Length: 273
Image 1 (cartoon, rainbow, N blue to C red):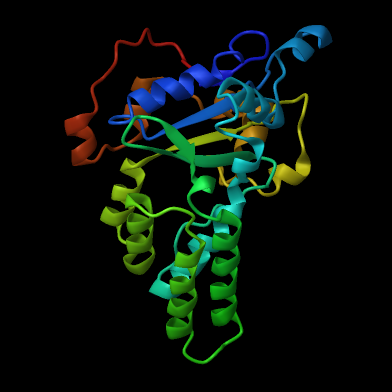
Image 2 (image 1 turned 45 degrees about the vertical axis):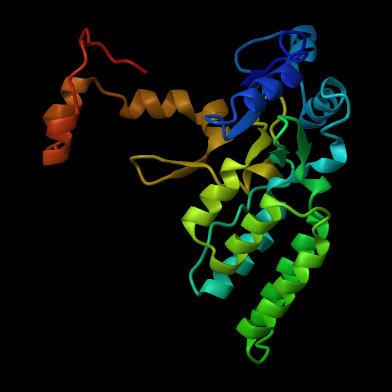
């Protein structure tokens, strides 16, 4: 959900409660502080603006301290875990390499009584990340038998679980096998709470843009970061490359799958953006 200051920023705790009560179908809640577009005067922008720290403090207050600011981690903090798993498996894994200011996340574990607690109450996440970095270094430094040494370090991670139970068992199993099904079992026991703040023309940060992992591929070959595309380039790109559905069909030979799955919408023949 998009969060707007003065509009719905007092409902973030309620949204988390809704997710917890419907955890059989909800796997995560990803809050998006509003990205302000268009001509809006300063006072209105100031009223609407909400930052990631604002949101995290609101969640702390509205959950009565159950999800504290210290329970959150920048998205790229998880990169060492993906890197370590990739090295151990001999197959690259997804590494979240965006700028640290782009987003934050945490996980909450739902107990049998329906109450929840953040994952930081179950495992020492800082130590978890530290061990992942150490495993990556074993491979990078060309240490002898890095695979065996990595497993020893991974086994040591068990000491940093603060509580026993299903979550510990599932996470341990996933780290050993790193298979989709064990990850799925883990995710069915938790809810991801996250936030990603897409930039606008009023808070553009070039350093963040340079680390953007979400990009648009433009027909002329350019790769444009998400935030700059929406704030700067979208109108020009759509004006240059936009076309009606009929124009697209006339210039594009559809594959068999496209022919079978694409239904022609009722367009009025004008360009739609």
